[in-house]
Image 1 (cartoon, one colour):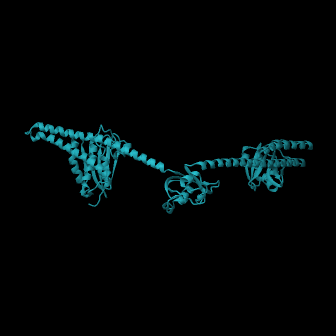
Image 2: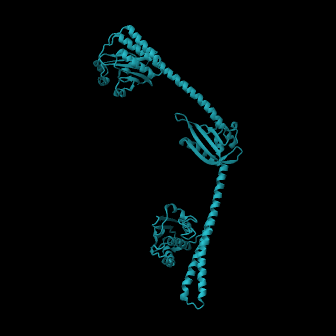
Image 3: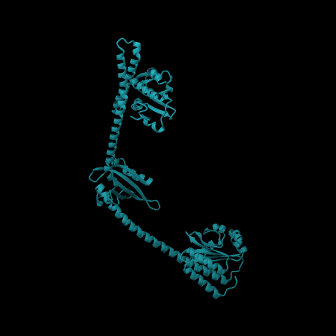
Length: 550
């Protein structure tokens, strides 16, 4: 750098110092020093580092430095063998007049210096009140001799930078403290408003617990719901709000443990007031933790839901009553229709027989008698279904188990159904294994078979019906499959309920009781009944029964 008169340098330094008075943040200070100082000293590049956490230098600002070098020297350990770290450790400036001198003293940065085109380097500690707070580095594009006046000016620039940085950091701290104080004041004001809000709430008991479960705060809602005044309960353990049984079972401590582990615990149960009366409460316990995760206590919000629960129960009762009325009315409509058909048929057949006269040959009367018999059987089944509804609903479905061969029961049942299958144009495919023995109620098993076969005829008329009976280990299996209209997936669970059906009543008869009765009979035997079906592809019902000792 050409020689500059001392007066000019002093004026330049004063201009930098004046500019620094307007810099209010550390980054602005570094920007002024680099922008003015580089041009005044004739440097090609420069950086300002600040000491952080006592053992690391972090770059605050840089000028005319490549991105690669910026990334490499953004954060430097104080113990690193680098010029900016050394001057902070020793508080003595480093002057490197040539690339050879730089390589000799700091081989770790020789490659970087060569890439950046550095001919000379100066590093000066930023010192305030005898302590290093950072470093200023200046890189020159050509080798140079650092004369006394150069060094004096660079050190003066570094001192001005250090003072300005210290002032800016103090200002930032003061501004941060002021902001925190203002925030604290707002929080206090907000807390007072929140406290007033919580205290005025009467429908909820809202209070705080310490980590051990002792009451710390109390609001008016808590006093109204639980009956304690604040002076009576603050400092007492919250377990006194629980029944004796819950306390013995450790429920209060368990709820605190769940809240501490999961953040919150919700519960609805019986709680106890001061006078010993009980109420149903909806409770939410929330763990309160500070910034480092330490448990500070719990908030507890309790609501008396006794009346709400009663109202809910009353709504359920009314809904069930309405559903019962609807089911009754629907059932009576279906029953009247179902009974009208066989009764009308019986009357018609009887009238025809009476008109045929006393000398009617038996062969001519036989079809009429068979029709009367079928309708009589149908009426018997309808009446039995009504009786089963009464018995099952009242819990009086009694079984009379006896040693049976399921194979024989199925064969006999299917013999009874042959004429009906023939009239419905349903070919019967029967596969029955031998020796399927167990203890079952014969009459009830026949009901299950009849209901499943009747179901297959109703929804699969004109198509084959398959009946399979077999044994597998300790279980017996009965399968009835049709190839009819099938059942939609959403209806497959519903069809086993009372009065439920998957198709309109006007197209397919029946009470909607057959599968419900079959399921209850099978379950009473300890078995299960399942269905597999797809619309348009028929249905397959499988009954599994335990083979109790015959």
